[in-house]
Length: 191
Image (tube, rainbow, N blue to C red):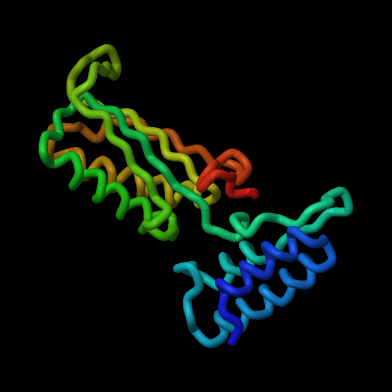
């Protein structure tokens, strides 16, 4: 078996040396990952074989003079920032953890990549009223769809209802963000 960490290291070295070597290493990497899928092992907590193929298939155009960075093989982030006039008190961390789980379940992305921030007890009006309300923005590299968005909206709303939020007083905006527009670990997910 070829270990994935060793392959990533080889790809990085190939990236530093030459494009042909990098392409060869990526092909070997793709073949090795295929054998992991066939043997039923999970690589980086990816949920489906199709998602795995999508992440590993790398398009090299004639205008592209360099290999992609290995970050481009990672699932990417979902993040959610929620602002509310509700006072969540000492339950705020529990609500953030609940939202993180809702997002992981809805998007199929590993919870290790999910970030959630809540700003509670702030000035906010909705429909001209300061009654309990919430606004949120969720951004993700892929995994933005009608079904996923509905599941996140339902889950977040249900977590906030015990604090007095009416389901008709929350907006969540969903944004599908290109890999090059998400920074992480001193790079973007595009490399």
